[in-house]
Amino acid sequence: MSSPKATVHFHSLGCPKNLLDTEVMLGSLALAGYAIAENLEDADVAVVNTCSFIESAREESVQAILDVADLREDGRLRALVVAGCLPQRYGAALAKELPEVDAFVGTGAYQEIAPILDDALAGRGRGVYVETGSTHLYDDASPRILTGAGHSAYIKIAEGCDRVCAFCAIPGIRGKFQSRSLESLLQEGHQLAEAGVREVNLVAQDSTSWGKDLPALTEGAGRPRLEDMVRALDQVEGLDWVRLLYLYPSAVTDGLIDAIASAERVLPYVDVPLQHGSDAMLAAMKRGTTADRQRALVERLRAGIPGLTLRTTVIVGFPGETDEDFEALCEFARWARFDRLGVFRYSDEEDTAAFELEPKVPREVARERYRALTAIQGEIMAERMEAQVGNEVDVLVDAPFGGTQVLGRLPTQAPEIDGATFLKGANLKAGDLVRARITGVRAGVDFDAEALA
Image 1 (cartoon, rainbow, N blue to C red):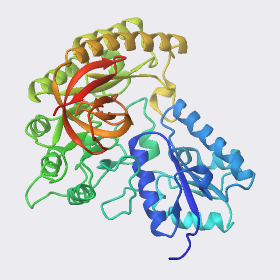
Image 2: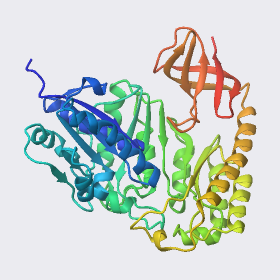
Image 3: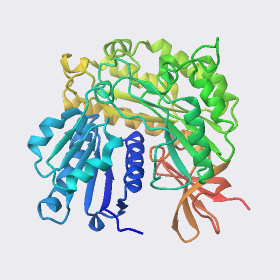
């Protein structure tokens, strides 16, 4: 075997969609003759795959770059590459501010990562590889190296977004919406199952728009819809759990609810970002819905999907949010009693409609509202979790934890965002799917459980 061109280490930040992009770039580099280093100290080249969705994500990305830049300046790295949303949004400006970086790779150039690294290592100038309005969407034929647990993986069903939410910069970063074909998604599902993956999590910026840009599945039929994909993936042998994430609330149809409710492998888990409970805020956010419709959707979901786990996210501190608006949001949370609720403070983003809105909510007020709503949800979640103690459940084992205990997750727990289950049992290993009984709750977030004989 020939020696590798160089050894590459990736540091991936942000959401699971970013992680997928990293896995595809890793696959491309491995095919091109690069070796992959798990640790930075073993690498010749570092690639930082960044996020720039909100201010805190940008700060984390810039800090990650600076942490590696000293190694490049000292000659301990032969090249430093910055990829992802940050260069897509600020490529030319970043090139001026970060001379230590050899190449900036936007979201439309992931498939060119190998020749870009070839040029960087050969010293053929610093490059900014950014195409406005373009994001590369991988398919089942794309090389990919799974990171993390081999029994769980993500599938990106679409890329980009055509929505006009006032607070969101994603359409300007990731470009127009584009779906992957059903054939490609099914093929990847089979490939992952054959590789030993038991759980797949379907992601996109807007999952409910999947299919709107695809041709009809058969002559005379309409365009495919998300419920068609749900029913098709539910038939993939070898997969145990299929979880659907990021549903746009106004686009959730009765057909989709029925497809989830009748599925065998697709979990009764719905992640639908509702964002607020005040009509004034929903209108200002350009969400295309009302508080009453939000409540009606919650009722439809719970009535239509037995055993539903309902996760949502909301924003506090949006421009113009009054005390009355915030109280309406709190009352909505108390009424809905969500299984999971992610609370985010508004981030003022350039090139969004909300950037021009006034009055801005003071940061300290936004922080107080964040703490207050988080406390309300903490009480709700604690009550809901305590009510599950004694239940028999399935647990997917993720990793050893020490002694006879392992870390795992219930069907109600999506990777990395919904807590974990500390499972006691003998001879358990990652990828096992075992029956267990919930024995307790840890810190209002995690479960304790014991495997059943």
